[in-house]
Amino acid sequence: MNPVLEVKKLSRYFGGLKAVSEVDLSIAPNEIVALIGPNGAGKTTFFNCITGIYEPSEGEVLLHANGTTTSLNGKKPHAITALGLARTFQNIRLFQEMTVLENVMVGFHCRTSAGIMGALLHTPAALREEQETIDQAYGLLRSVNLHNSYAAKARNLPYGAQRRLEIARALATSPAVLLLDEPAAGMNPFETRELETLVQRIREAHKLCVLLIEHDMNIVMSMSDRIYVMEYGSCIAEGTPMEIRHNPKVIKAYLGEESHA
Ligand SMILES: Nc1ncnc2c1ncn2[C@@H]1O[C@H](COP(=O)(O)OP(=O)(O)OP(=O)(O)O)[C@@H](O)[C@H]1O
Ligand SMILES: [Mg+2]
Image (cartoon, rainbow, N blue to C red; front, side, top):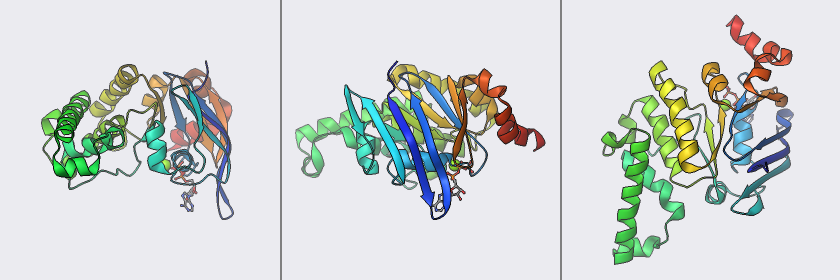
């Protein structure tokens, strides 16, 4: 099947450090793909390169969505979001002083059309659009089980709930690809199990594919269709959870490290 996202020989250097070195990665429609590796392996830098936060030093990022192929190289983060790539952050980036509902409404912004003047003048079209946005945002909050907290300030939510709110905000941009950077970090075991079901439900309901960075091996092994493993900036393995679990390089680089922890 043709990929939705195709990354070719992506590299990113910081001075003499090769944080990401010639990484190839692709995601097919409907796939859940995990990107794993020890701390400092280059996973977040890889995300930052494909979402426009960093410019890749070398390589190409192609998005095949809505019947067209677009190169994401050189595009700004907001333009990449509008093209269909949405993400959450390892260090949560919510609007802490805004309400839970408002945080999701911001996500819809790149898809609404009435414009700032319409909103300021309270034109009927703008009011109608605002109400639709509220309804849709509330619907997304319901899907991540945060609708009862819609009026709370984001900063007052527990950590795990903030991570789910970030997912809802990302979904508001109608992505073709959802990128999650350590979504289970800070979640308790119950929330972590719920997250797994949530991501699978999102994949079906929103017809998207997911690339997730995650250190929790239980989640990675049980929910991923395929896994890429990075070490010192390079991709050292790619395969199904079963293949990765038995790959000697991976055991040495990553799982081995875990078992000594
Ligand atoms: N802006 C930057 N300037 C200089 N070095 C950076 C920068 N961002 C990341 N690095 C370095 O690049 C390497 C990869 O970092 P990165 O954050 O991508 O790792 P990671 O795989 O996400 O690790 P973790 O699992 O701890 O989140 C590290 O050595 C890091 O110190
Ligand atoms: Mg990281």
